[in-house]
View 1 (cartoon, each protein chain N blue to C red):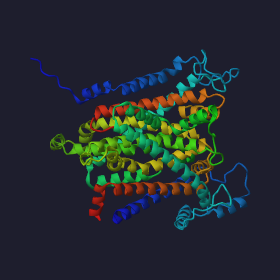
View 2: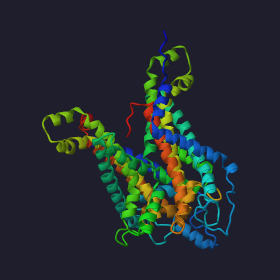
View 3: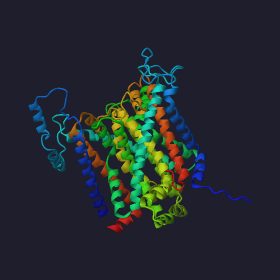
View 4: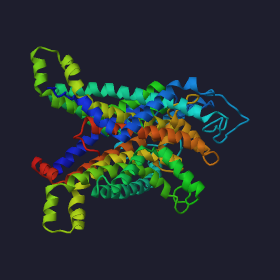
Length: 286
Length: 311
């Protein structure tokens, strides 16, 4: 007689995720996009700053699939290079938010009592601050620097993560396996790191996936206003803001970077939604 | 209820104070001042200017006297527009931003709410998928992309609507309002759909139907009230988002509102203007969060009961 094979939470979730067509499309799109951006310097036939002034702004053609900008620079090349920056900012700033949020939330949830209520009151207060205004201010005051951009965006996005992790940890803390860990004398640090955080991973993964598009949007917003990425670097937000200037004559300069950004944001949101349905079936789609 | 209100109002004070303090010292810590132009200014003129704007006093005293003025509702003179006060500038931009925000909110609530309720009435059908896919587009599409695209299509290619301005030519308010409202319409559609779905299977609706009420009355009188509750709670944060969204929309469509003033002030290092607008916007945001909490309490009998018990 064959024993029935146990299905772990993760296997179960991956089956559910694979059934979700939209989420899988999103995942495939993202993988392709990230790979393309990673290998850009080796696959594109044009340089990022390579100008061909005789060409000027030309519509899409066989030589330049997505056309050229007013200096005759190949748009496909520029969009891929811009994607490197946009995706990089998206991932790194989300990582910053993830680290701060998970640490803060886990400590608050595990400590409980007064420490918890003070820490969470602080989060409540920060929620009420008009952060967008502060980021604009920060970028203006301290110059447009990439590290500061990461810090500023990361500092905004960690709040929700902290709340989610705290809620999870609070629930988990009361379960027997934590009691067991305490009774064999494990340190609070080991308990948080080895027992609580791994068990709270599902919602953390879901929220991380949904944070990346927010962060990319914020970067694009700042770059669009001229406060984010500065030339000669480029990002999708910056390319869009150039595109807007000449959209009447050369609409492809706006449309292609716009499509690249919008599709990536779609893909991330669909994947995030799919992950939520897969990892946390109880949470409704809202 | 009153105790709840007072308590929430008291909580708002430290938030606003924190905003003022952080902004004040952040702006002062910035390299370069409003008068550090390329032209060499006569030292006496420089000193006179600094005295006029209290820049010659120690930082902490500047801070305290700023707070003192603020309590009396005076946000001080603008650095960049000599002879005009920050109050004047804010109140010249505010009506425009408020109008834009109002229309955007109308777009969001009407279109989003209708789409969500419509989708919830027939879940997992075409009637559900089409509005929900559209709402996803609304959520993902950044306003600085949607705005120019709408201008390109409806303003330039089709030539139906004006491409910029506010109140100068008929129809120029349409595109900015849609651009600003689209994202919130998307969120509201999703919120009202899930809220309605939850309510539609609730016992009290079964009771309403069992009483023999026509379906229209069941939906309009009983389901909507409970189902749209999540939307009400969302309106406060949505308003805060609308304010920062108006930065972009006002830039794209060249609308002389508060958002554009703020961006200009930030670029020009107009200290008092930055401080004034930040304080003002923060107070507005806090106020609207408060309003949405209170209205959620008022709409939800369970919460109302809790407040009654607490007070």
